[in-house]
Length: 231
Ligand SMILES: NC(=O)c1ccc[n+]([C@@H]2O[C@H](COP(=O)([O-])OP(=O)(O)OC[C@H]3O[C@@H](n4cnc5c(N)ncnc54)[C@H](OP(=O)(O)O)[C@@H]3O)[C@@H](O)[C@H]2O)c1
Image (cartoon, rainbow, N blue to C red; front, side, top):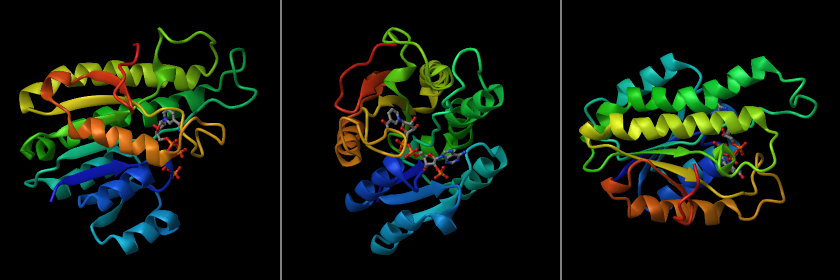
């Protein structure tokens, strides 16, 4: 049975990843900050016994380390670093930047991904083809930025992309691949109601790309349908 760990698993894209991987027969470790209040996740975990809900606030590196300890000696096939925050808020654009929110955004969207890769390197290396997936955004593309704004979010996803590109080289000797995704503009709490696709379509597409991943693709930044994204 293949294994996947998903962060930010209680709603949005993370929840849909858990559902679809459980339906596909995977063992799913669904990590969220507050399992007691994760009603939707607990509901699907009732339905699919292969879903195990675990507690993880990705800003808490001690929590990442304790969770990783439970995986030591066992293979983990896929780690999806999905948890993310938008950070930017109305009234806090250029001229009124909230620097505390910016720091939090960088901790959640960037640093946690590298910390997860550091802590879970051993279980991922034990898999036949361990893969680390980061859910980024086209908004992290410098080349694509034609409108400005969203300084916190854009800078965090650009930093995530840079960090993941380096990770793809740094972790290659352990046989672990890295894929960076733009999931599309998806109708979730973060994407809002005007998104261009729903979570099921986005996740089905990313699962297909993950399924056919080959090591020479490691470090690519792609959309859920496999289209290469500009850096
Ligand atoms: N939706 C889109 O259109 C879109 C587009 C491009 C990229 N993305 C990226 O896709 C990923 C998922 O987005 P989404 O649309 O599903 O957003 P969402 O519906 O807002 O869900 C965000 C998830 O991240 C979790 N999270 C936030 N801070 C966390 C922390 N410190 N520790 C653990 N979990 C934390 C949230 O948990 P809580 O419930 O505890 O807050 C929630 O489960 C994000 O990285 C986002 O940037 C989304």
